[in-house]
Length: 229
Image (tube, rainbow, N blue to C red; front, top):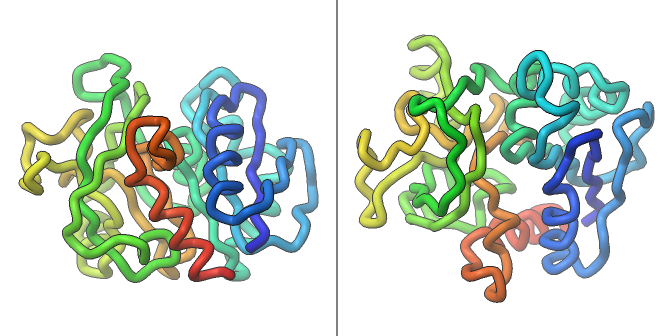
């Protein structure tokens, strides 16, 4: 599997996801600067977390107009798998590759802690390493992770089985108490209509090694390798 990680000014999780990918794949991904206008032939593109362009204007808004994102969108339209994590999720919504927006957390505070997620869709390349309704533990670290979309969009996401992850309690209960940021319907990650683009606020790359305190995130990268070879 050939992978590439996009690097913006302000990215701070690009190396984390590169390490996680190398552990699963056995070789390091390409690191592509945001000014690149071409992306080599790859099977996976990751838009990592961080504070692209310092989060000026609106999280992900400036990064969405970087030269490389035109190529990322074109590759996604051609069927290449694209994973956006945290700020990467924000970038993907700003480009229109995923519906909805990420707003300020309901408590208006930056949140950095481990959360539990319930797996919703287990048939995508990103989630095939998990079982439907499996509960996993993954860290979050964001100020604007409150997912919002209109009711019609939310109904369509649910009806088309495109909600990949929801915030939940350790026992799997999905309710307001388990929702760290106010996201509608406890949504933590969604897929596009083709299933080849995933945006998620939690950071699977931060729990992909036992030395980091857990390996629940590793299944995502191992699953991608199994799906994409």
